[in-house]
Length: 105
Image (tube, rainbow, N blue to C red; front, top):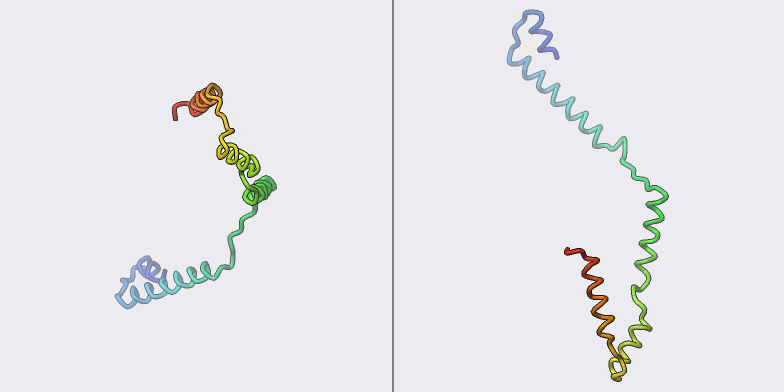
């Protein structure tokens, strides 16, 4: 700011004065950046109770199997021994219901 003061008082600004002002300005900018990067303040995140409950539910679901393995084994056995039958009417109804749920996606 010394350069501005010199201009206001009617004095001309020499190149050495400009250079000194730039050096002072750069040093103060570096000092401010250093203070900011030193981490005097740190960011923090906190979760609401609902967020914590959702996280716990997610962890619980991730550890459980998503299907009934006993039922799958029974169906595999029925298919293997030829006793598994398919109700074509029920299958067709479920396919139509599924299509309607998708809604043309």
